[in-house]
Image 1: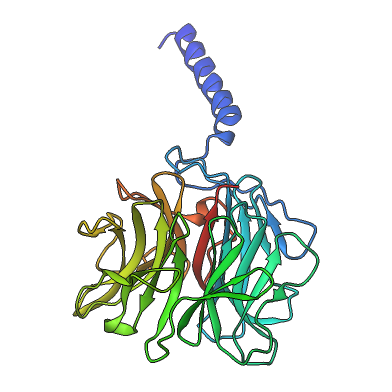
Image 2: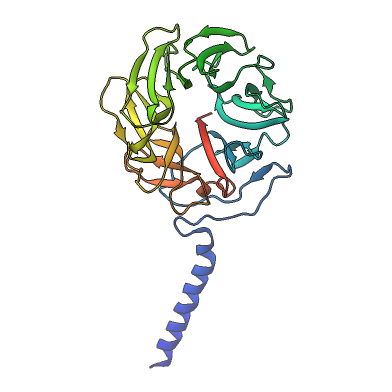
Length: 343
């Protein structure tokens, strides 16, 4: 081989090496998160511990609130808020004197959350209201009433809270004053209420296990109508998504209790199973984010353990772990009860 050709080859190799060393550092392999290692100064805040550069990862800029625990009733229940815009993950319940805080819901501008929990050591379920970012403790809206208060959800304008009290549906204002007794049939278990877009109705789950179905009812207690009631199949956790449809969880079949996420329609059209569901894992607690995605919990393979949080496309079925946004979100615990707000 001629000397000048060897020289050209060596020069080409050197040039390629320089390009590789200077260029690939910022081009993370698709699906693998880059980690900066930066931590927040407060012990309950983690920042920028890893964003993915996957081109197809949904772009989200709002806030997410969720809870995690080892098991329902375990003493390690925690509420977190994740800000997609700043990549800050905050364990907000860390210093509250509240046992089992869970099932939080944002108001219309994400300035407040409402959630259920127990005053430390009391064993009584109550409804709490907290201003996001406040140094003050959450306010107990149902303190001392001797009743079991659960499943709170804000009205669309944030002025009212629908919730379950001793198996019935109630509505209260932000001071804790009951304004509506929507149902009064204590022999039936009615819970998980969610407001319609126009705030004239609640949709909710009635019954337990294979007898759990989804209904809608006017807030004055009239017009109760079944909107998801497949025989022998548990249907629960309804979440309204606009004026025409709602998300909910249901068993795969009467003989297979794997949870699946379905889209229901107020028009009465047949409900549809969303395309990310599989028969080998549970998919539940879905909440809308953006125009075409949901955040949900799943036990699908490849996760961190138990239920993990994912964002999924309701059209294509593409599904991504929220660990792709922040590596501190999913863990060996169960991450559940997601609520997303665009603010």
